[in-house]
Image: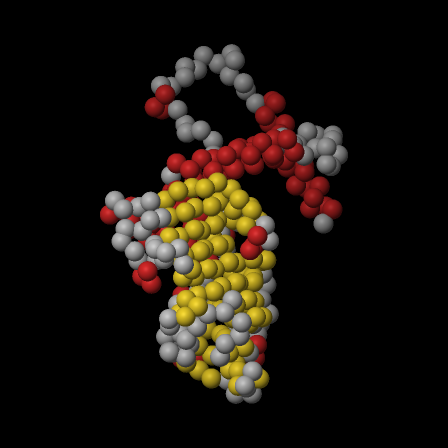
Length: 305
């Protein structure tokens, strides 16, 4: 490990030295090209790379690390993202989804939800979730608010495309698993969506698609409300957006949406939906998120039910 670290520092030192010994162009009769021919400004990633190469030979860790430069780049990135959220929220949300697609393969987390289903408000539910993108896999383990099942599993193109669950019988776990279609009435008795539509990315795509449709129709009302701590997810700082009113109201009578994007992970970690009377339709929160974990080989099998 020490050898690898020394090798990395040696390479970075050489790159830093190049900045001092390269031709500055002071004696070069080069004529600057017109503005339209000049290269684009450096991206924040390129700026960060340059900052990392500024390790000065002869200095020891941590003095050799350009902390101030890195902090400056981080602040610049935060400022750019907040400006984008304020002025171009749709582009900001597209950026968040792109970030997810490029970086997230799965996660573990605690999921909190409450929904108005079948004419009544359901209990508050707390679940431990294991999720994998490829193949699409969801393992839910109820901590609070258990309904008809203690645990459920869905893996795309496995188990004949069915949901598999450990049912509860008189509040006791049944020794026999049952299988259901994802849209079976039993499976949908306490949920607005089938398990095959679960996920942070699913929620972000749905939010963005509805916003784009309203924008195209000229009926979008979307307000950026700043960066706030969200207590439901451990007081993590989040970009807050409010979409209201809806013209017209959408499925299930949705007329008001507040949603939150985690400032660090760029994930949509909170959503609160209300009707025209501001009565709760549903709320969803994702907390204690562990991105791209190494799952046990049995995690998405019947053995874990």
